[in-house]
Amino acid sequence: MQRNTRNIGLMILLSIMLVAPVLGNPNGPPWDNGGNLVIDTGCTCHGGGAPSTEVVVSISGVPRAYNLSESYTMTISLQHASNEGGGYLIWDDGAGTLTPGEGSKSVDDEPGALSQSEPGNGWEITWTAPSEDVGPVNFKLVGNAVNGNGAFDEGDKWNILTFTISEPGATEIATSEDIALRTISVGDYDSLFVAEEDPEAAEAERQEGIAHDFFTNGNLYYWTTLSLIIVAAVIQGEFYERRFGGGPTHLDKSLAIPQGLRRGALAAVLGVAFASFVDSDQPWGYSLVLGMLTLWAVFGVYRTIVQARASKTYTDLV
Image (cartoon, rainbow, N blue to C red; front, side):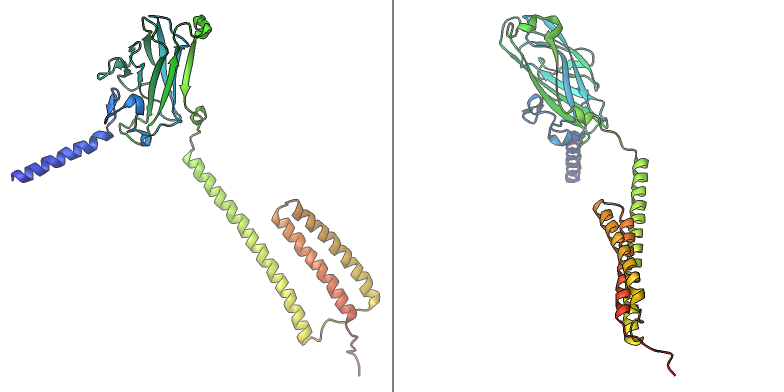
């Protein structure tokens, strides 16, 4: 009995351990993720564990160079084609002082860093520069745009932004208030403009494509088959005429010559038209019709020549 109870307890513990990684962190990401700092490696539990350019992480109100002990209000924003909100984590490596605004909080394991206190977007924070010149200050910002289902999955996308604020006096334009502040971002803005496909419209388009292919291929098979049948019938007629009918009837040259010229001219015109249609990529149906007419005209010339060469026969002898 004790063994069964122990096994059940172990199974429950394992289930909790398996479920825990899929639960979201709405009140802020952990500082340490299995021995790796999230601020360095990113939100590896989300989106397949790799950063994605689909998320544009940006921060505005960033000075090019800081003035000693001066405070700067910055706004952190996330942009994604479908995920509207999420969370963030920012740290200046302890150089200055980060103060949370509405929707933000200090990280428990590293009070100098800030994260969201609840899922959202457009967080306003304050950074106070150090009271003495410590050189350039390096920032790390991780932004995670989530799909809102409360689980770690492929639908969540994150990205990392690193930037630097130069030391006092490093740039001349840092003292100019109108151009001193800037917006810094990382990500692919083109990925934000992805039109959502209407399933009904997509299905209608697919059905229309099937119908078009069926109509096109059906016509192709029908007219091609009909052409082959006509050609085969002509060849068969020639065979039976020669085998059982004694060959083509004789045509006097006084009639054969003008008939051959007319049929030859018609074959030449149709041949030129057929070549022109094929060369200009006209619809295949037109080319097929012209091709068949050309063959018909050529066959007419052939019949005229054969009949002109045929021997005279006298069927009315007594």
